Image (cartoon, rainbow, N blue to C red; front, side):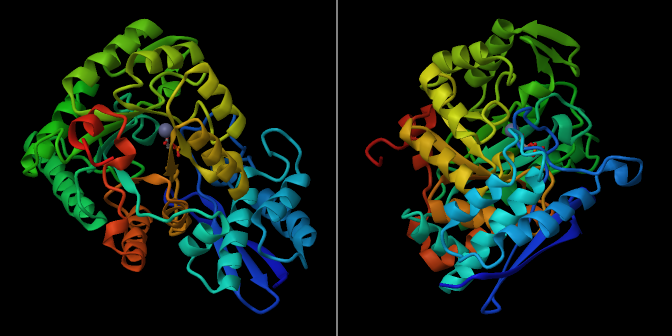
Length: 437
Ligand code: PGA
Ligand code: ZN
């Protein structure tokens, strides 16, 4: 049993050029655990608050106050604690901040410490992180099916289109390598189509192509065309996943699609999404209505829950109580797991377990502001979550996470790729996986 010798936070910088927190946990035996806090841009109102300094410098985004919480409050409280039981250490962190949104310590301070402790425990056990996670939580590790962004929109692209993420999934692939290969073909095919139309103009926050389209449907049409140009038949090996992130343009049951200059109520908006589900090979849809529209979420789930995966992100903010409530209420059938949305690794774990108890899918996810930290690849693989959402197929903070999955796959063996199984309850799963799951 090894104890914590020191905890030190430092300011580092994320993929948007904003300051964030890195934490080093050093053990008595000299081993190190290190992690960096990510940052969201389309945040749920009930998620843990990042502590930012405000004021005129660095757009108010500096993290000196949160760093002071790491170095002056959390570090002394955890000093000399035995590493190994993540739940005990996370409880000790949370005892320092009973506020509902964790704004005393800051969600950014909490998540960096909690993840760094997990890394340190893996180092102490002499195991790679994914293996430590699998052993610690008694889970069967596997290589997840990724959702990969081709066009970025919404809050990640100056609201150039309303919908936030136009992604592909490759559930028909036989290995993670094949997913990467096909995604690379689709990503560049999409870029070539945009270039042909004279619409290629850079990339969005998570590395997807900048969505210079005249309508949200044009993005969907282009995505289908890109899948075809890559030599695949849309709806077979390759399918579409959307993050509507509807809280960004829908409030109190009114949805305003700025690009198309249209405003509609919940019923009309759900009708529109239903038409997209009929017209395009979509298997997964995230936050289809706003976080303040639980009736809409329940209605959407009632209508489409047996044919697509419906993921709650802003609506559920990785909160186990909200997941339990929503499952009883009949809203969503999957949850995004973003550790920094709730604070600690242990709370995120509780949420995944609550989701699985309800028969839901858990999708481990990055934030739009990321770094070289690859903890989520290990979390997804170690927990055998089945799915992983990281952003696009461009920019190193994203590619680092996909590449880490390839390394974990080498350790685990290719037959541990989950393939299309997590989509068994969707129309794609029913069509393709007969007799397999
Ligand atoms: P984020 O959003 O900008 O809050 O990280 C990502 C998402 O909505 O999934
Ligand atoms: Zn989302």
